[in-house]
Image (cartoon, rainbow, N blue to C red; front, side):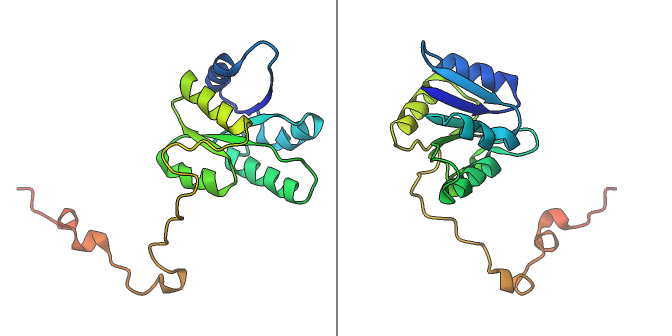
Length: 164
């Protein structure tokens, strides 16, 4: 299996290569998100693993760019596993077209399970189902000026008190 890993963090390179490296497997490590498409064009990976932060172009932007290139038939489909920093990033990972996502910190067992599922054509979701309903907006954009309540004005924490 050939794995494309895009991250600028040495500890992630170590974690992923130690967990997924087997005899015969190869890795290409990209330290800049902008070069991922070039690497895919040179050698299509069986799996791409993208960190949320990759130099000047994050993993979500890289995944979206790959999906656009795929839809324009400039690049083949590449299964993507996204490494996110927090639960709040899960919706973005799903929306950008990743087949799977893991919340850091990483461990070898979860990395192996996710890589195997995605490389076999499946999905791997952690913390948010891949087919979960989208989050509804809290208010319509057109109504932003109407009905907005100043939470600080109504909160007891917003009251002025005499300290002495």
